[in-house]
Image (cartoon, rainbow, N blue to C red; front, side, top):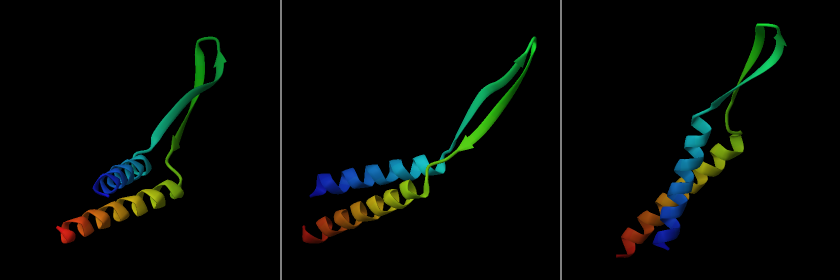
Length: 71
Protein backbone atom coordinates (compact mmCIF):
# COMPACT_ATOMS: atom_id res chain seq x y z
CA UNK A 1 0.00 0.00 0.00
CA UNK A 2 2.87 2.33 0.79
CA UNK A 3 4.44 1.82 -2.64
CA UNK A 4 1.10 2.67 -4.29
CA UNK A 5 0.89 5.86 -2.25
CA UNK A 6 4.42 6.90 -3.22
CA UNK A 7 3.68 6.14 -6.89
CA UNK A 8 0.53 8.26 -6.77
CA UNK A 9 2.45 11.16 -5.22
CA UNK A 10 5.15 10.97 -7.90
CA UNK A 11 2.57 10.74 -10.72
CA UNK A 12 0.63 13.65 -9.22
CA UNK A 13 3.70 15.88 -8.95
CA UNK A 14 4.70 14.96 -12.49
CA UNK A 15 1.27 15.74 -13.92
CA UNK A 16 1.06 19.03 -12.05
CA UNK A 17 4.57 19.98 -13.17
CA UNK A 18 3.67 19.21 -16.77
CA UNK A 19 0.60 21.43 -16.51
CA UNK A 20 2.45 24.32 -14.88
CA UNK A 21 5.40 24.36 -17.25
CA UNK A 22 4.37 25.05 -20.80
CA UNK A 23 6.38 24.74 -23.96
CA UNK A 24 7.13 26.89 -26.97
CA UNK A 25 7.12 25.60 -30.53
CA UNK A 26 8.81 27.71 -33.20
CA UNK A 27 8.58 26.88 -36.86
CA UNK A 28 9.36 28.67 -40.08
CA UNK A 29 6.27 29.41 -42.16
CA UNK A 30 7.61 31.49 -45.06
CA UNK A 31 11.07 31.62 -46.63
CA UNK A 32 11.80 34.17 -49.36
CA UNK A 33 15.47 34.34 -50.24
CA UNK A 34 17.39 35.45 -47.17
CA UNK A 35 14.23 36.46 -45.26
CA UNK A 36 12.03 34.11 -43.30
CA UNK A 37 9.01 34.39 -41.02
CA UNK A 38 8.61 32.18 -37.99
CA UNK A 39 5.62 31.41 -35.82
CA UNK A 40 5.98 30.72 -32.10
CA UNK A 41 3.17 28.88 -30.37
CA UNK A 42 2.83 28.45 -26.62
CA UNK A 43 1.28 25.24 -25.39
CA UNK A 44 0.37 23.81 -22.01
CA UNK A 45 -1.20 20.68 -20.63
CA UNK A 46 -4.95 20.34 -20.84
CA UNK A 47 -7.02 20.90 -17.72
CA UNK A 48 -7.62 17.14 -17.44
CA UNK A 49 -3.92 16.54 -16.70
CA UNK A 50 -4.04 19.09 -13.89
CA UNK A 51 -7.17 17.53 -12.38
CA UNK A 52 -5.83 13.98 -12.62
CA UNK A 53 -2.49 15.11 -11.19
CA UNK A 54 -4.20 16.83 -8.28
CA UNK A 55 -6.38 13.83 -7.53
CA UNK A 56 -3.39 11.45 -7.69
CA UNK A 57 -1.31 13.70 -5.43
CA UNK A 58 -4.06 14.10 -2.83
CA UNK A 59 -4.90 10.38 -2.95
CA UNK A 60 -1.27 9.43 -2.46
CA UNK A 61 -0.85 11.81 0.46
CA UNK A 62 -4.02 10.47 2.09
CA UNK A 63 -2.80 6.89 1.70
CA UNK A 64 0.55 7.83 3.26
CA UNK A 65 -1.20 9.56 6.16
CA UNK A 66 -3.42 6.51 6.68
CA UNK A 67 -0.36 4.22 6.74
CA UNK A 68 1.25 6.32 9.46
CA UNK A 69 -1.86 6.18 11.64
CA UNK A 70 -1.94 2.37 11.53
CA UNK A 71 1.65 2.00 12.73
